[in-house]
Length: 378
Image (tube, rainbow, N blue to C red):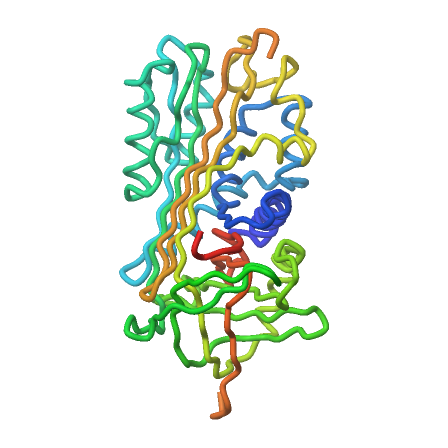
């Protein structure tokens, strides 16, 4: 596994997350940029010409080592153990009578352990097969990912991720109580808040108008440890303005500079579900050819003209006293395209206004999930 792979995946994730959060201001949000990266990496391998070049640029792949997505998958799978659950699965679902390039299917099976299956797109029975697989791979959290397919759909590429982690220091349910969350300077809502006083990695950036705390999950070793980071901007600030601190080097530096601090944590329980149309974001990242008659997916479909008809992600994040459960599934649909420490006074870390959350692997620098909570009672 190489540091280049993690830097590449993280740079793409930061770009995508920035576009997504800025387009979703004032709402609760959730995205798994890593799931999108893996899915689009599989697509990229079947592209050629301008289509491939645009996808590589959007994915931040420059001098590719050809192993970026596989290295990321290794981090995910090696993180799963008796203390922390993290799974990922890839699927290639093919339309009946569609004959893909054999080398492409072989590549996905070998390098991505892809589940390959033929289904009848354009029928409810075909969609059910795909959706049942996604639901199984996400522990029942992502349902009905694929709907309204057409008979000219030739394949669906899917990545699914699921995680369940328990806090290293759980919150006591008996300490949870309703309190005010300041959605804005003029709007306040009631929400259930969890409370605890413990030592956590923490940094206050007064000059940047935010504080950041890292809440660790149980882990078997430092190499497999994940944390939830919470960026709490100064009240009245726009959380999406702070997503720049999720950039690979910035986040590494913030984590390194953080120190164990006795915190009085007040954090809302929240459940976020999101369905994201990713095509507009890839268009902003410079991907054009993939969506029209100029698409070149000859590495997948040979001489048959095909193009991307949909890129969609469904995401689920649930944060409570015990820990976090999260899942995401990303699908790319392709269709025939005929024209288309010392004791101290605790620091208050009261998360009572909009904030950014992210699930982070300090060893590699990968952000698995991220989002904004604008209103925990929504």
